[in-house]
Length: 465
Image 1 (cartoon, rainbow, N blue to C red):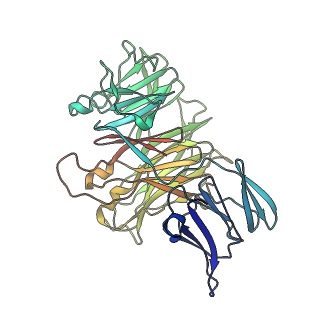
Image 2 (image 1 turned 45 degrees about the vertical axis):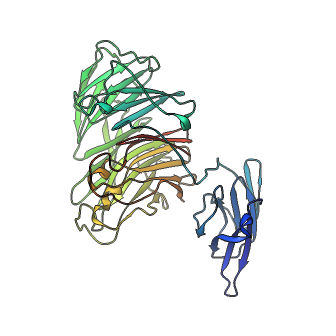
Image 3 (image 1 turned 30 degrees about the vertical axis):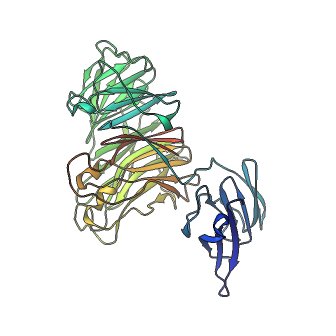
Protein backbone atom coordinates (compact mmCIF):
# COMPACT_ATOMS: atom_id res chain seq x y z
CA UNK A 1 0.00 0.00 0.00
CA UNK A 2 1.07 3.67 0.02
CA UNK A 3 2.03 3.34 3.69
CA UNK A 4 3.05 -0.27 4.33
CA UNK A 5 4.56 -3.38 2.84
CA UNK A 6 3.14 -6.65 4.18
CA UNK A 7 5.60 -9.51 3.76
CA UNK A 8 4.85 -13.19 4.33
CA UNK A 9 7.80 -15.37 5.29
CA UNK A 10 8.74 -18.50 7.19
CA UNK A 11 11.85 -19.64 8.98
CA UNK A 12 13.93 -22.77 8.52
CA UNK A 13 12.14 -24.10 11.59
CA UNK A 14 8.82 -23.62 9.76
CA UNK A 15 7.53 -20.77 11.91
CA UNK A 16 5.15 -18.62 9.86
CA UNK A 17 4.98 -14.80 10.01
CA UNK A 18 3.68 -11.65 8.38
CA UNK A 19 5.97 -8.66 8.76
CA UNK A 20 4.77 -5.03 8.42
CA UNK A 21 7.28 -2.55 6.98
CA UNK A 22 6.99 1.27 7.06
CA UNK A 23 7.34 2.74 3.55
CA UNK A 24 8.01 6.26 4.85
CA UNK A 25 10.79 5.11 7.22
CA UNK A 26 13.11 3.26 4.83
CA UNK A 27 11.02 0.07 5.19
CA UNK A 28 11.79 -0.37 8.87
CA UNK A 29 9.79 -3.07 10.64
CA UNK A 30 6.66 -1.91 12.53
CA UNK A 31 4.97 -5.14 13.55
CA UNK A 32 5.07 -8.93 13.21
CA UNK A 33 2.16 -11.40 13.26
CA UNK A 34 2.87 -15.10 13.86
CA UNK A 35 0.72 -18.00 12.64
CA UNK A 36 0.68 -21.70 13.45
CA UNK A 37 0.38 -22.74 9.80
CA UNK A 38 1.55 -21.49 6.43
CA UNK A 39 0.28 -18.12 5.22
CA UNK A 40 -1.16 -18.61 1.74
CA UNK A 41 -2.36 -15.16 0.73
CA UNK A 42 -2.54 -11.49 1.80
CA UNK A 43 -4.99 -8.81 0.77
CA UNK A 44 -5.69 -5.29 2.06
CA UNK A 45 -9.00 -3.41 1.94
CA UNK A 46 -10.88 -0.87 4.07
CA UNK A 47 -7.97 -0.37 6.50
CA UNK A 48 -7.86 -4.10 7.18
CA UNK A 49 -5.16 -6.69 6.39
CA UNK A 50 -6.72 -10.08 5.57
CA UNK A 51 -4.41 -13.06 6.06
CA UNK A 52 -5.45 -16.41 4.56
CA UNK A 53 -3.65 -19.05 6.62
CA UNK A 54 -4.92 -22.46 5.55
CA UNK A 55 -6.42 -24.31 8.53
CA UNK A 56 -6.13 -21.14 10.67
CA UNK A 57 -8.73 -19.56 8.37
CA UNK A 58 -8.87 -15.90 7.38
CA UNK A 59 -7.89 -13.33 10.00
CA UNK A 60 -8.43 -9.59 9.54
CA UNK A 61 -6.18 -7.08 11.34
CA UNK A 62 -6.94 -3.39 11.88
CA UNK A 63 -4.37 -1.16 10.12
CA UNK A 64 -6.27 2.15 10.38
CA UNK A 65 -3.47 3.29 12.70
CA UNK A 66 0.18 2.22 12.40
CA UNK A 67 0.59 -1.45 13.38
CA UNK A 68 2.97 -2.06 16.26
CA UNK A 69 4.36 -4.88 18.37
CA UNK A 70 3.68 -8.57 17.87
CA UNK A 71 0.65 -10.85 17.60
CA UNK A 72 -2.14 -8.29 17.39
CA UNK A 73 -5.67 -9.60 18.01
CA UNK A 74 -7.66 -9.96 14.76
CA UNK A 75 -10.86 -7.93 14.44
CA UNK A 76 -12.39 -10.15 11.73
CA UNK A 77 -12.46 -13.96 12.00
CA UNK A 78 -15.08 -15.49 9.66
CA UNK A 79 -16.25 -19.02 10.37
CA UNK A 80 -15.04 -21.00 7.33
CA UNK A 81 -16.12 -24.49 6.30
CA UNK A 82 -12.59 -25.37 5.13
CA UNK A 83 -8.97 -24.15 5.04
CA UNK A 84 -8.43 -20.72 3.43
CA UNK A 85 -6.11 -20.21 0.46
CA UNK A 86 -7.03 -16.72 -0.69
CA UNK A 87 -9.48 -13.85 -0.24
CA UNK A 88 -10.66 -10.64 -1.90
CA UNK A 89 -12.95 -7.84 -0.77
CA UNK A 90 -15.73 -7.14 -3.28
CA UNK A 91 -18.02 -4.29 -2.23
CA UNK A 92 -19.40 -5.14 1.21
CA UNK A 93 -18.32 -8.77 1.03
CA UNK A 94 -15.21 -10.77 1.86
CA UNK A 95 -14.97 -13.61 -0.68
CA UNK A 96 -12.76 -16.52 0.38
CA UNK A 97 -11.31 -19.38 -1.68
CA UNK A 98 -11.30 -22.37 0.64
CA UNK A 99 -10.63 -26.06 0.27
CA UNK A 100 -14.36 -26.80 0.23
CA UNK A 101 -15.40 -24.06 -2.20
CA UNK A 102 -15.94 -20.31 -2.44
CA UNK A 103 -17.49 -18.64 0.61
CA UNK A 104 -18.63 -15.05 1.05
CA UNK A 105 -19.15 -13.02 4.23
CA UNK A 106 -20.90 -9.69 4.69
CA UNK A 107 -18.48 -7.20 6.25
CA UNK A 108 -19.78 -5.21 9.18
CA UNK A 109 -18.66 -1.55 9.44
CA UNK A 110 -14.95 -1.23 10.17
CA UNK A 111 -13.87 0.27 13.49
CA UNK A 112 -10.52 1.97 13.92
CA UNK A 113 -8.44 1.29 16.98
CA UNK A 114 -8.35 4.91 18.13
CA UNK A 115 -11.28 6.47 19.99
CA UNK A 116 -11.38 10.25 19.64
CA UNK A 117 -12.33 11.77 22.99
CA UNK A 118 -14.43 14.89 23.43
CA UNK A 119 -14.76 16.24 26.99
CA UNK A 120 -18.11 18.03 27.04
CA UNK A 121 -17.48 19.77 30.37
CA UNK A 122 -17.08 19.47 34.13
CA UNK A 123 -20.56 18.06 34.76
CA UNK A 124 -20.04 16.09 37.96
CA UNK A 125 -21.93 13.02 39.15
CA UNK A 126 -23.95 12.54 35.98
CA UNK A 127 -26.11 9.44 36.39
CA UNK A 128 -28.14 8.76 33.25
CA UNK A 129 -28.66 9.76 29.64
CA UNK A 130 -31.41 8.96 27.13
CA UNK A 131 -31.51 9.85 23.44
CA UNK A 132 -34.57 10.88 21.44
CA UNK A 133 -33.68 11.34 17.79
CA UNK A 134 -30.78 13.80 17.72
CA UNK A 135 -31.55 15.08 21.22
CA UNK A 136 -30.18 13.89 24.55
CA UNK A 137 -31.49 14.27 28.08
CA UNK A 138 -28.80 14.06 30.76
CA UNK A 139 -29.44 13.63 34.47
CA UNK A 140 -27.30 14.79 37.38
CA UNK A 141 -27.82 13.46 40.90
CA UNK A 142 -29.87 16.42 42.09
CA UNK A 143 -29.94 19.34 44.50
CA UNK A 144 -29.07 17.15 47.51
CA UNK A 145 -25.56 16.95 46.01
CA UNK A 146 -23.11 19.78 45.22
CA UNK A 147 -24.70 22.50 43.03
CA UNK A 148 -22.77 21.48 39.90
CA UNK A 149 -24.58 18.14 39.85
CA UNK A 150 -28.09 19.48 40.35
CA UNK A 151 -30.33 19.34 37.37
CA UNK A 152 -31.81 18.00 34.21
CA UNK A 153 -29.99 18.90 30.99
CA UNK A 154 -30.62 18.71 27.26
CA UNK A 155 -28.16 18.55 24.38
CA UNK A 156 -28.22 18.66 20.58
CA UNK A 157 -26.45 15.58 19.20
CA UNK A 158 -26.15 16.72 15.60
CA UNK A 159 -22.35 16.67 16.07
CA UNK A 160 -21.50 14.76 19.25
CA UNK A 161 -17.78 14.94 18.51
CA UNK A 162 -17.90 18.75 18.92
CA UNK A 163 -20.52 18.98 21.71
CA UNK A 164 -19.17 21.51 24.21
CA UNK A 165 -21.92 22.12 26.78
CA UNK A 166 -25.33 21.06 28.08
CA UNK A 167 -28.48 23.15 28.52
CA UNK A 168 -29.88 23.27 32.06
CA UNK A 169 -33.68 22.96 32.19
CA UNK A 170 -35.28 25.21 34.80
CA UNK A 171 -37.77 23.70 37.22
CA UNK A 172 -36.51 20.13 37.04
CA UNK A 173 -34.23 18.66 39.67
CA UNK A 174 -31.81 15.83 38.98
CA UNK A 175 -32.11 12.22 40.04
CA UNK A 176 -30.84 8.68 39.54
CA UNK A 177 -32.62 7.36 36.42
CA UNK A 178 -34.40 8.43 33.24
CA UNK A 179 -36.77 5.99 31.55
CA UNK A 180 -38.69 6.40 28.30
CA UNK A 181 -42.19 4.94 28.38
CA UNK A 182 -44.05 5.47 25.13
CA UNK A 183 -44.63 9.21 24.69
CA UNK A 184 -43.56 9.95 28.26
CA UNK A 185 -40.33 10.11 30.18
CA UNK A 186 -39.99 9.10 33.82
CA UNK A 187 -37.51 10.95 36.03
CA UNK A 188 -36.64 9.16 39.27
CA UNK A 189 -35.29 11.37 42.05
CA UNK A 190 -32.38 10.37 44.25
CA UNK A 191 -33.25 11.69 47.70
CA UNK A 192 -37.04 12.16 47.66
CA UNK A 193 -37.94 8.71 46.30
CA UNK A 194 -40.41 10.26 43.88
CA UNK A 195 -41.00 10.04 40.14
CA UNK A 196 -42.05 12.83 37.79
CA UNK A 197 -43.47 12.30 34.32
CA UNK A 198 -42.31 14.53 31.49
CA UNK A 199 -44.54 14.64 28.42
CA UNK A 200 -43.84 14.79 25.61
CA UNK A 201 -40.10 14.14 25.94
CA UNK A 202 -39.13 16.76 23.36
CA UNK A 203 -40.98 19.56 25.15
CA UNK A 204 -39.67 18.90 28.68
CA UNK A 205 -43.01 19.79 30.25
CA UNK A 206 -43.63 18.10 33.64
CA UNK A 207 -47.07 16.56 33.97
CA UNK A 208 -49.03 18.29 36.72
CA UNK A 209 -49.55 16.11 39.79
CA UNK A 210 -47.43 13.34 38.36
CA UNK A 211 -45.17 12.70 41.35
CA UNK A 212 -45.53 9.44 43.24
CA UNK A 213 -43.51 7.96 46.08
CA UNK A 214 -41.54 4.76 45.66
CA UNK A 215 -38.73 2.88 47.36
CA UNK A 216 -36.78 1.48 44.41
CA UNK A 217 -33.20 1.72 43.23
CA UNK A 218 -34.04 1.18 39.55
CA UNK A 219 -37.11 0.82 37.33
CA UNK A 220 -37.97 -1.29 34.29
CA UNK A 221 -41.15 -0.84 32.21
CA UNK A 222 -43.28 -3.02 29.97
CA UNK A 223 -46.06 -0.97 28.42
CA UNK A 224 -47.97 0.71 31.23
CA UNK A 225 -46.59 -1.60 33.92
CA UNK A 226 -43.40 -0.57 35.74
CA UNK A 227 -41.24 -2.71 38.01
CA UNK A 228 -39.20 -1.09 40.78
CA UNK A 229 -36.15 -2.99 42.06
CA UNK A 230 -35.01 -2.64 45.65
CA UNK A 231 -32.64 -5.45 46.62
CA UNK A 232 -34.77 -8.62 46.89
CA UNK A 233 -38.10 -6.79 46.44
CA UNK A 234 -39.71 -5.92 43.09
CA UNK A 235 -42.66 -3.55 43.34
CA UNK A 236 -45.19 -3.47 40.49
CA UNK A 237 -46.83 -0.15 39.53
CA UNK A 238 -49.65 0.75 37.16
CA UNK A 239 -48.27 3.81 35.35
CA UNK A 240 -50.97 4.06 32.66
CA UNK A 241 -52.23 7.35 34.17
CA UNK A 242 -49.44 9.86 34.75
CA UNK A 243 -51.50 11.75 37.32
CA UNK A 244 -52.58 8.72 39.35
CA UNK A 245 -49.91 6.03 39.63
CA UNK A 246 -50.83 3.09 41.83
CA UNK A 247 -48.69 0.36 43.36
CA UNK A 248 -50.39 -2.94 42.60
CA UNK A 249 -48.28 -5.36 44.61
CA UNK A 250 -44.76 -6.37 45.59
CA UNK A 251 -43.01 -9.68 45.16
CA UNK A 252 -40.09 -10.94 47.20
CA UNK A 253 -37.17 -13.08 46.04
CA UNK A 254 -34.56 -15.00 48.00
CA UNK A 255 -31.79 -13.15 46.14
CA UNK A 256 -31.05 -9.47 45.43
CA UNK A 257 -32.13 -8.51 41.92
CA UNK A 258 -29.55 -6.64 39.83
CA UNK A 259 -31.35 -6.08 36.52
CA UNK A 260 -34.53 -6.96 34.63
CA UNK A 261 -35.11 -7.60 30.92
CA UNK A 262 -38.17 -8.95 29.12
CA UNK A 263 -39.28 -10.29 25.76
CA UNK A 264 -42.62 -11.84 24.91
CA UNK A 265 -44.04 -13.82 27.81
CA UNK A 266 -40.76 -14.04 29.73
CA UNK A 267 -38.87 -11.72 32.05
CA UNK A 268 -35.26 -12.37 33.06
CA UNK A 269 -34.02 -11.24 36.46
CA UNK A 270 -30.26 -11.24 37.01
CA UNK A 271 -29.54 -11.76 40.71
CA UNK A 272 -26.52 -11.33 42.97
CA UNK A 273 -25.86 -12.18 46.59
CA UNK A 274 -22.65 -10.26 47.28
CA UNK A 275 -21.47 -12.37 50.19
CA UNK A 276 -18.29 -14.29 50.85
CA UNK A 277 -19.70 -17.23 48.89
CA UNK A 278 -20.92 -15.12 45.92
CA UNK A 279 -24.15 -16.42 44.39
CA UNK A 280 -25.51 -15.19 41.04
CA UNK A 281 -27.66 -16.34 38.16
CA UNK A 282 -30.79 -15.65 36.11
CA UNK A 283 -34.36 -16.17 37.30
CA UNK A 284 -36.84 -16.77 34.46
CA UNK A 285 -40.36 -15.43 35.09
CA UNK A 286 -43.52 -16.12 33.11
CA UNK A 287 -45.17 -12.70 32.63
CA UNK A 288 -48.08 -13.73 30.42
CA UNK A 289 -49.88 -11.83 33.19
CA UNK A 290 -47.37 -8.98 33.85
CA UNK A 291 -48.95 -8.19 37.23
CA UNK A 292 -48.43 -11.74 38.52
CA UNK A 293 -44.98 -12.98 37.43
CA UNK A 294 -44.37 -16.68 38.07
CA UNK A 295 -40.89 -18.18 38.42
CA UNK A 296 -40.48 -21.03 35.92
CA UNK A 297 -36.73 -21.56 35.92
CA UNK A 298 -33.47 -20.54 37.58
CA UNK A 299 -30.04 -20.68 35.94
CA UNK A 300 -27.23 -20.54 38.55
CA UNK A 301 -24.01 -18.89 37.37
CA UNK A 302 -21.64 -21.12 39.33
CA UNK A 303 -19.53 -20.75 42.46
CA UNK A 304 -18.18 -17.32 43.39
CA UNK A 305 -19.63 -15.57 40.31
CA UNK A 306 -21.03 -12.06 40.63
CA UNK A 307 -23.52 -10.61 38.09
CA UNK A 308 -23.46 -6.81 37.92
CA UNK A 309 -25.47 -5.76 34.85
CA UNK A 310 -27.55 -7.37 32.08
CA UNK A 311 -28.98 -6.31 28.73
CA UNK A 312 -31.25 -8.20 26.33
CA UNK A 313 -30.52 -7.72 22.63
CA UNK A 314 -31.94 -9.98 19.92
CA UNK A 315 -31.82 -13.59 21.09
CA UNK A 316 -29.11 -13.05 23.69
CA UNK A 317 -28.76 -11.90 27.27
CA UNK A 318 -25.47 -10.03 27.79
CA UNK A 319 -24.19 -10.12 31.39
CA UNK A 320 -21.25 -8.24 32.93
CA UNK A 321 -19.78 -10.45 35.63
CA UNK A 322 -16.80 -11.02 37.88
CA UNK A 323 -15.26 -14.31 38.94
CA UNK A 324 -13.99 -14.03 42.49
CA UNK A 325 -12.49 -17.46 42.99
CA UNK A 326 -9.06 -16.06 43.78
CA UNK A 327 -7.73 -13.98 46.64
CA UNK A 328 -8.28 -10.42 45.47
CA UNK A 329 -11.96 -9.70 46.08
CA UNK A 330 -12.05 -7.40 49.10
CA UNK A 331 -8.82 -9.07 50.22
CA UNK A 332 -10.62 -12.35 50.96
CA UNK A 333 -9.14 -15.62 49.78
CA UNK A 334 -12.17 -17.35 48.28
CA UNK A 335 -10.36 -20.06 46.41
CA UNK A 336 -7.52 -20.74 44.03
CA UNK A 337 -6.53 -19.07 40.79
CA UNK A 338 -6.83 -15.47 39.62
CA UNK A 339 -9.91 -13.30 39.90
CA UNK A 340 -11.25 -11.98 36.61
CA UNK A 341 -14.10 -10.03 35.06
CA UNK A 342 -15.82 -10.15 31.70
CA UNK A 343 -18.91 -10.86 29.61
CA UNK A 344 -21.26 -13.83 29.43
CA UNK A 345 -23.75 -14.32 26.61
CA UNK A 346 -26.80 -16.48 27.29
CA UNK A 347 -28.90 -17.57 24.31
CA UNK A 348 -32.71 -17.71 24.43
CA UNK A 349 -33.11 -18.51 20.72
CA UNK A 350 -34.05 -22.18 21.09
CA UNK A 351 -35.85 -22.08 24.43
CA UNK A 352 -36.67 -18.70 26.01
CA UNK A 353 -37.54 -20.49 29.26
CA UNK A 354 -34.04 -21.94 29.56
CA UNK A 355 -31.23 -19.46 28.78
CA UNK A 356 -28.12 -21.39 27.76
CA UNK A 357 -24.46 -20.43 27.97
CA UNK A 358 -22.88 -21.81 24.79
CA UNK A 359 -19.28 -22.93 24.59
CA UNK A 360 -17.24 -19.87 23.70
CA UNK A 361 -19.94 -17.50 24.98
CA UNK A 362 -17.68 -16.02 27.65
CA UNK A 363 -15.13 -13.23 27.34
CA UNK A 364 -12.63 -12.33 30.07
CA UNK A 365 -9.88 -10.61 28.11
CA UNK A 366 -7.14 -9.18 30.30
CA UNK A 367 -9.26 -8.19 33.32
CA UNK A 368 -7.30 -10.34 35.75
CA UNK A 369 -7.05 -9.08 39.32
CA UNK A 370 -3.50 -9.19 40.63
CA UNK A 371 -3.61 -7.02 43.76
CA UNK A 372 -6.12 -6.69 46.58
CA UNK A 373 -7.77 -3.50 45.34
CA UNK A 374 -8.11 -4.73 41.76
CA UNK A 375 -11.61 -6.03 42.45
CA UNK A 376 -12.76 -2.44 41.88
CA UNK A 377 -11.81 -2.68 38.18
CA UNK A 378 -14.51 -5.30 37.59
CA UNK A 379 -16.95 -4.67 34.75
CA UNK A 380 -20.22 -3.32 36.17
CA UNK A 381 -21.90 -1.92 33.03
CA UNK A 382 -22.75 -3.51 29.69
CA UNK A 383 -24.25 -1.78 26.61
CA UNK A 384 -25.08 -3.54 23.34
CA UNK A 385 -25.49 -2.11 19.82
CA UNK A 386 -25.75 -4.71 17.06
CA UNK A 387 -22.56 -6.78 16.97
CA UNK A 388 -20.72 -4.46 19.37
CA UNK A 389 -20.66 -4.60 23.17
CA UNK A 390 -19.16 -2.05 25.55
CA UNK A 391 -17.97 -3.25 28.97
CA UNK A 392 -17.15 -0.65 31.60
CA UNK A 393 -16.02 -0.49 35.21
CA UNK A 394 -18.37 1.37 37.52
CA UNK A 395 -19.06 2.82 40.93
CA UNK A 396 -16.83 0.35 42.77
CA UNK A 397 -13.78 2.05 41.23
CA UNK A 398 -14.26 5.02 43.55
CA UNK A 399 -13.55 3.06 46.72
CA UNK A 400 -9.92 2.35 45.75
CA UNK A 401 -9.24 5.32 43.43
CA UNK A 402 -9.12 3.04 40.42
CA UNK A 403 -9.00 5.05 37.19
CA UNK A 404 -11.52 2.87 35.39
CA UNK A 405 -11.50 0.88 32.16
CA UNK A 406 -13.79 0.56 29.11
CA UNK A 407 -13.47 -2.17 26.48
CA UNK A 408 -15.18 -2.63 23.10
CA UNK A 409 -15.71 -6.23 21.95
CA UNK A 410 -17.25 -7.78 18.85
CA UNK A 411 -19.97 -10.41 19.27
CA UNK A 412 -20.62 -10.85 15.54
CA UNK A 413 -19.86 -14.49 16.35
CA UNK A 414 -21.14 -14.99 19.93
CA UNK A 415 -19.15 -18.24 20.12
CA UNK A 416 -15.91 -16.39 19.41
CA UNK A 417 -15.97 -13.03 21.21
CA UNK A 418 -13.15 -10.77 20.03
CA UNK A 419 -11.79 -7.66 21.71
CA UNK A 420 -11.78 -4.74 19.26
CA UNK A 421 -9.99 -2.16 21.38
CA UNK A 422 -9.55 -0.44 24.73
CA UNK A 423 -11.63 2.74 24.76
CA UNK A 424 -10.37 3.68 28.22
CA UNK A 425 -7.24 1.58 28.85
CA UNK A 426 -6.58 -0.01 32.22
CA UNK A 427 -4.14 2.49 33.74
CA UNK A 428 -4.12 1.26 37.32
CA UNK A 429 -4.86 3.14 40.53
CA UNK A 430 -4.23 6.66 41.73
CA UNK A 431 -3.15 7.59 45.28
CA UNK A 432 -5.87 8.97 47.56
CA UNK A 433 -6.23 12.72 47.39
CA UNK A 434 -8.68 15.59 47.24
CA UNK A 435 -11.24 15.88 44.43
CA UNK A 436 -11.39 15.87 41.49
CA UNK A 437 -9.13 12.80 41.45
CA UNK A 438 -9.57 10.08 38.78
CA UNK A 439 -12.60 10.29 36.54
CA UNK A 440 -13.95 6.76 36.82
CA UNK A 441 -17.06 5.87 34.76
CA UNK A 442 -20.34 5.90 36.70
CA UNK A 443 -22.66 5.20 33.77
CA UNK A 444 -22.41 4.74 30.00
CA UNK A 445 -24.72 5.12 26.99
CA UNK A 446 -23.87 3.54 23.62
CA UNK A 447 -25.54 5.55 20.84
CA UNK A 448 -26.06 4.28 17.30
CA UNK A 449 -22.99 2.08 17.50
CA UNK A 450 -20.86 5.15 16.77
CA UNK A 451 -20.62 7.18 19.99
CA UNK A 452 -20.16 6.27 23.63
CA UNK A 453 -21.25 8.74 26.32
CA UNK A 454 -19.35 8.22 29.57
CA UNK A 455 -20.81 9.83 32.66
CA UNK A 456 -17.85 10.16 34.97
CA UNK A 457 -17.62 11.57 38.44
CA UNK A 458 -16.01 14.77 37.23
CA UNK A 459 -16.88 15.13 33.54
CA UNK A 460 -19.15 14.06 30.71
CA UNK A 461 -17.18 12.57 27.83
CA UNK A 462 -18.07 11.45 24.29
CA UNK A 463 -15.89 8.83 22.60
CA UNK A 464 -16.19 8.47 18.82
CA UNK A 465 -15.99 4.82 17.81
